[in-house]
Length: 316
Image (cartoon, rainbow, N blue to C red; front, side):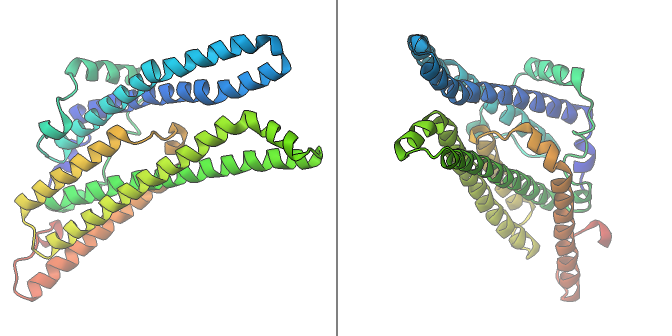
C-alpha cells in the first residue's frame, strides 16, 4: 500500500538518521557541560569558599566567567545543534513519509557535506542496528495518507512518554537530595539557621531539577495536545471526511508542529532512550496495529453499507 517500510531502511534515509543521532549526541554533550558549569561548579565553589576563605576571589571570578560564557557560547551552540538535528530529522521524515519540504516553517535544509560528516562520525563508533525500522513495519498495510498519520502519532507518543519518564526521574532525584539533607540535619541536630546554611550549596541543583521537571512536563503536555488533534484527523479520515489531498495538507501542518518541538524542546539524557527503547517500541508497534484494526473495521463497515471503503492491504 505504501513504501514507508522500504524507504526508511534505504541508505539515503539511514544516512540522515546517522547524522541526526550524531548531532543530537553533540547537543547532549553540550547540555551536560552546561549542567556541570552552571549547577555542579557553583555547588563545589560554594563549598571551596567556605573551607578555604582565601580562594573566594578566585571562585567569584570563575563564577563570573561561567555566567558570561554560558549564554554567549554554550547555550548558543546548544541551540544551533538542536535546530540542526531537528532539520535533519525533518529531512528524514519528508523522504520516508513523502511530505513536501516547508521552506517557510523550517528554512533551508542542512547541507549535504554537514550531513555526510556527522553520519561518518556516527558510523565510526556504531552500526545501524538501532536505526533500522524507525517506524512500525505494519504501517505498510495502510494507504499512504493514513500511514503518515499513524507514524506521526506514534512519533509524538514515543517522545511524550520519554519526557514523562525523564521528568519522573528528575523529581525522584530532587526529592532524594532534599530528603537526604533534611535527614542529615536531624541526625546532626542542627538549628534552623544552620540547616538553611547547609542547604545553600545544594540550591542550584534543586533549582535546576525543579525547572527541568516542569519544562519536560510542559513539553509532554504540548505533545499530548498534538496527539489529540492527530486522533481527530484519523477519525475524520476513517469516516471518509478527509481525502488524500486534505490529509496530506494536515499532515504537513502536524509535521511543522513536530519540527518546532524538536528544535526548541529540552533534551533528554541519552541513557533513557536505551533504557526505555524496547518497551516503547513494543507499545509503538501495538499502537500502529490498533490503528490498522480500526482501518479494517471501518473498511468492512463501509462495504456492508454500500459505501466506498478505505482500501487496505487486507481488502485487496
